Length: 129
Image (cartoon, rainbow, N blue to C red; front, top):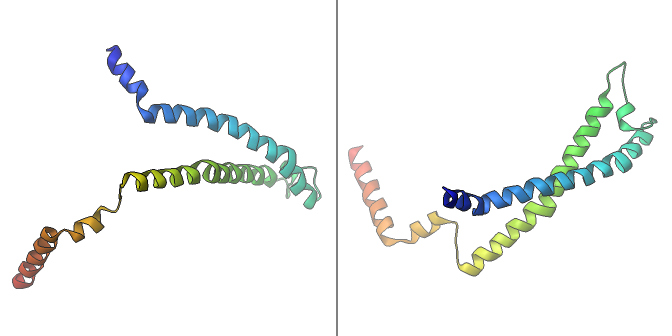
């Protein structure tokens, strides 16, 4: 029972997920600080308000929605450019170094047996018509 638990914990996906949750929480507070401390007052001044949250039109508080959208876009962009893009690059470098090719269809088309079987299949389909 403990061996199964140990194997579960030691899987790469579980560890990666735990690291991602912790890093996401820490990074979220940094981005929230930047949005609330710098960007919100700057955008508010452009529209003659103290902050984006105070922007309203006939009682509708659209400023808080704009602030949330800006925060979401900044978090998403930062995660993409700081985490996803570099990881994809490193995975690509590793795959090239190990000779791993993800394009299996291209390899299958080069196989003469597959090409012959495809030709036979097409020939049989044309006779049936």
